[in-house]
Length: 297
Length: 147
Image (cartoon, rainbow over all chains, first blue to last red; front, side, top):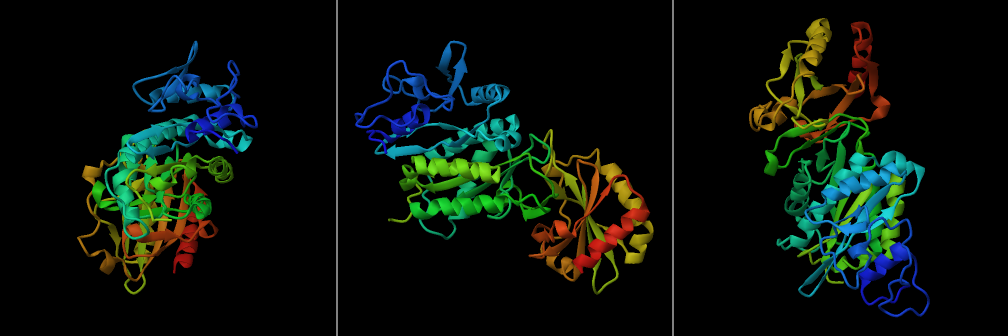
């Protein structure tokens, strides 16, 4: 249990340095000069979140240490390739944001998936797509101006068109859409493609993990048979077919109300995402969507 | 590179819808049906010339990438249900691993976007290229399961 005044700093410190000492001050970060653990590949704000900020969450590793890179997430691709070549594999399993009044803060949490199975499954191509998709999804989530209705109803299709479609297309993928079954997009970077699916949920915190796990379970079997579906009218409509066969990777995009921005930063949630990623060989990208208010709880 | 074969339950005709790979590079995994179906008057006619025709189609398709603008609707608007009803369906795919698969399909909706496979327990697979002697038993088994 941390005592940090700012949940982002709390998470960052927990990821990089482990739990704070008992009785630490609300602004505790880490002892001066202490090195982050190896599981912290990305250092928020040049490892100095008190004096620096990193509103976009874009960073890469330079020769002299970690430097913030302007100009886009592309640097992350080289960064992940370096991680792979060192025999490590990483998944950007969460990139949430918090909206507090008029101020929006972003962060990137980089977690290690240190199992042999994950290494065999998550290829550099998947990580590159993940980086690009995570970046575009983050932009769509935080800049969204469309007011999504709480509860059920037509929210799924609206979310596909307003958030998932531009996220997939901006990341260089082919958007298919056309409802909520099967897949919503494909990235033609590997044999079998990297498949992505978008889901939005307005459920209480206590049910969110179970709901996401069910999504991932269903998504894990999607390439076992041929897949047909109608393309969304926004991309020309018409039927498509994906023949049966293994995919190069799978990324599940999950949209939750902005009221759950804090919950998706919690260690419990992030740990569950890491466990599910390993179990189902797919990577969840969870975002709180601006103007998706959700049911009052 | 797929062929969706529709076999009439009440009428003898067989028609085949051709699926083309999209323009995405380097790996196109999504295919789009396009153009008029190829028709055979009876299952017997399909059986007599069908294997040669399938081989020819697979060879032609290898070099084709169809842009979205070039897709020609298979059916006239609102005719899909009428044309697809009372048909057994077998999907023939040639995948990147050079395997020919036969998958019995069923409709969840009378539309080309509303077909689902019966699953891997019903799927027949052959290495490609193959012979007609091997082809037809696999096709017939898939058709039996689709019926």
